Length: 372
Figure 1 (spheres, one colour):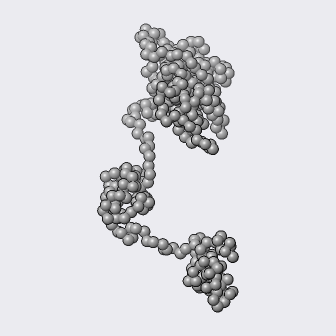
Figure 2 (cartoon, helix red, strand yellow; figure 1 turned 60 degrees about the vertical axis):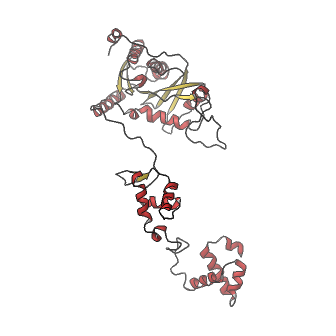
Figure 3 (tube, rainbow, N blue to C red; figure 1 turned 90 degrees about the vertical axis):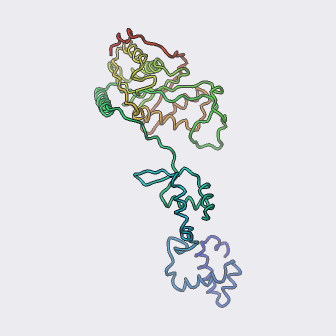
């Protein structure tokens, strides 16, 4: 009997034991109470509920509503105003959703409430804040600064160019450099399913790194194919152009054997920025060698996240190597090459150990000779 009783909830226990007590008859409550450990008053309550055909008992819960201790704000009406006064100078909020958040910890808020004579543990403080639509928040990047007056015009221009090149079967290529990565036994953000955590260095000192690698990506927008050059030198315009040339000599020219034009989508800054003289001269060299006319569209300032390579390639690479220490360049290359998606993304990668000097000056005479 006790084995069966142990698997029941509290109302089922008193009903079952009360039923058995009714079968025993006189003295059943005392006898069944001694056997099961239930108080005779509990058994008598179960009998009364059975005799009333369980009327008033809920089907979706064990206890009736309104049971338990009353909430602290009912016993102490001043605790909520006191808490709101404490967080008044430390609160921020979203005007659209009415969600709010505070910069002080629950422990400090509870301590200050106790100093004012309001007993409240951190859990109670948390509940009261949520009741007033406060919630935990992290920083959210959303401010891009003032936008360029021609921002929308440039987006429309890019869209028109993409549609024209796509309709003509010409390559539309998005390029950009991912953030530099320290290669060594360092922590990589993210989580992964493992039996044991990877042991990594406590500090990310560059002196402990094998090198600092720069992944430069070329993303074929229409074919959903990525190519990444992992460089160990500086992220220069020549490095960016070499990555584009390596891709074109291999996968690019095979995919577009008849193409005489190419559309490049790039950010406004960095190694492939619109002001980089070296990038322009490197592209002129590419066009002269391969006989391809390059149309370059730069995204407006503060709009780099709209570049397809950012959200169609880099995001998936970051997910693929999440929580994976990039101890060697081979590991980094393997993670990049292993990046796939259900929509068919495939990525190739290669190592570029070439040394790229910085601060190369391009004279005005050479700029005037470019066919821009």
